[in-house]
Amino acid sequence: MEKKSRFELGHTEKIRRSIYVFLRDELELKLKSIALEEPYRRCQDKGVPYPYVDASDLRPKKKEFSRESSLARPFLIMFVEDTIDAAHQKYIRFSDTNKVRKDNLSLVPDVRLHRPYSSMIRFFERDSFFELLDQLLDVDYGLLIQRDNRFRKHNRFSLTHFHVKIDWPIMEAAESLAKELRYVSKSLYEQGERYAEILQQKLFEFYGWHHQAVGGRRSGALSAFQYLKNMSGLSTVYVSSAEAKSLTRYSEKGVARYGVIQFDKGLARALIESSGLTEESFRQGYALGESEGFFDVILFVTYKHTEWGKPPEDGKLRILKPDYSWLAIDMEMILPMPHAVSFRPLPVKWVYRLEGDKRRV
Image (cartoon, rainbow, N blue to C red; front, side, top):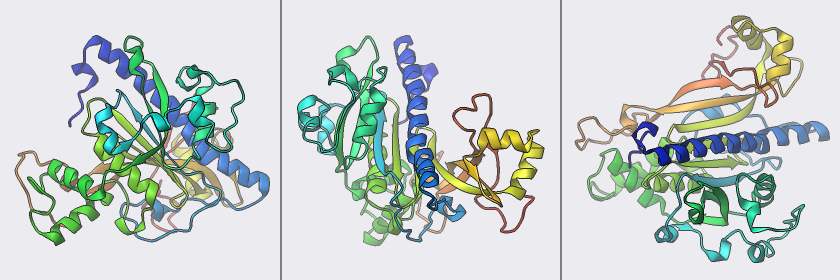
């Protein structure tokens, strides 16, 4: 379903959209810290090597398997602009049994809140919200944040459910995407089993992965977002992977990924000069840490869908050509540290850089 832009909304809907986008920025800032910055600091404190993201890890369709990092913190979060109707519980498993309330939380080991429980603890505007989210991130499956429909006039968002399982089969997600992109008209198998198998593989490519190298949370995340795309309102899915060692976001903006990389100081000096910075300001504003030859920085990569990964302009059915890529890198940016509020992201070309080329930034 094509989402309405902010300028196509009524005044009340515009306010809700503005609140949602603002809260999403706040959530993303916190998740970036949890998934990347905090593990990095723990490695520094313990004196153990940090599992950096390699350039190849950020390229679409990477096939190689990676070893899971015990230092990473995997999680899955769904944040929706509206309220998911109970009719969708067949595929997005949320109900009274996993609702965020005192009797359900008491069943979860190691959940220790620093203040007496209140039903208001789960609302986004409360100081307790991120404390609760942090406590529940490690519970298997995912978390659901949505608008509380008991407060329709106030546009209040809350962490409503935990231990939310995604039960939409990959086959159905692939069929949904194939119809959207006009590779099939009615059924995934209308062109035969081999055609259907390739479309299921291309589903993973569409969301930035290779089908053979993706684990449970990442599969659940892309299935969840493909399902949520068919609802009104915006949806955002975040997934942190212990194997990929990165934080991935699916939203109306497309696919994006965060990771901590080692940025060669030769490349950094060229970037510093072209950006009008000094090495010390770069160190203070962008570097998590450094070694003799590298600055450790957070790289943000956004991806775009190619012609073959978008619906055709004429709306007609088309033939699948498996060798044509559905996803490509759009932008790469080195992000400033959270405290560096006056610093802007710095555009770079790092993922496909030529090895040994110190000039290409």
